[in-house]
Image (cartoon, rainbow, N blue to C red; front, side, top):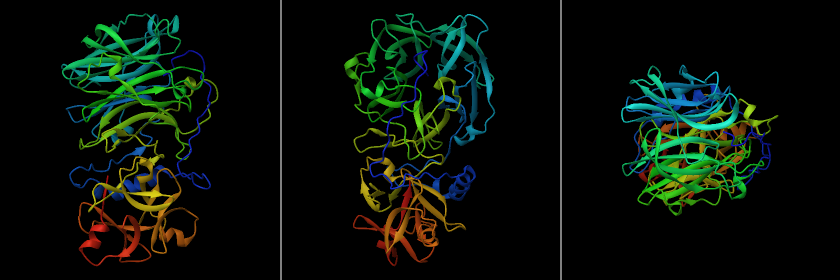
Length: 503
């Protein structure tokens, strides 16, 4: 949410891919086409994969229209619960489903409405739902009817197994040392200690909001003094005429705590930054937190996604993958105050992990079916990726989007599939002179045939996949000496080199 009452001007950052496509063309895919390919792939994507891999996560974006600051949790009852900011800023809503995709059509329940006078009477922002010690808690920010910018943090407590039908009671304001602009409360537990993290304007610091952490005495009360762990000082944290760190949330893995947060104006400048701390460190010491020098998730002109931010994390249905939940817009330019623009959408995509144990969020993927990576079945540390448009096999692909492809309905029609580049929409894997390249769709019949494949169960592992050329039956996408080719397969080695696991 905004940390300033002033309109935030749209001054979009540049977003140029490492190897920019010649035209920058960004053709659209329909939602129905995305759902068609999801149906075609349903059986194969859920199959078992080798140890160390995580199956592909199937979804279609956007997940929910006109819902900002999304928070999704998976509870022990098997349901995902989602809450988010409604663009009217007047209520707190919940929906639930047994799958992430199911949240898109799940009915929505209003569990609380703003007051008609006084505190909690305006700007109902950024609710989060947590289950703590047998009860439900919703953290949210709100202004007052006589001062809509007197934003403070508040808590609701819910009693009942299902939060959509629970009895909700107001626990009041979360008190901090300063009676100032405060928002975006979130909570987590590490080493048996529960913490609150939030954003606040601190007297004497010329910023809109900084990030803080404190221990909790109970779900609505701090214990001890808070610690300031981040102040917006970097150029990308201060775009659009504001100095903002807000929306903190954590992802814990590999012995570390990764705290992502939102920065800059809530237009196309909005982006995610990250702090990192050792799980065994004193989290109340500011020096335990290290800020990444560059944003970790930003607008992307090629995919048509602008202002990604205010995220949360959840897990896939099988529990094997971390899922990034966030909002953005599918257009750059906003007329007037971004806070009055209702079209921030809830989106999700899989989090991948670098070899050094740090998260890799990649880029905001295009609307429609979420992409996958093609992991080699016989060289399981390596993925198909493009480099200077040539398809190859590599390990440790830190430029994640180079190794992400959308499985879309085949350009040649029928039951074929095509593999569309994530960071170069409109470009597909195609064979040419028996080599495999990422090239732009020129609408020719030759291109469409060369870029279409029949997806088969993996030739060396039925849980994987193999891709047979539609115009050269019996020839498959196959890696050899680090590059991809179209070749016949006649032996066990060929079977292995032509088999991939969708991750």
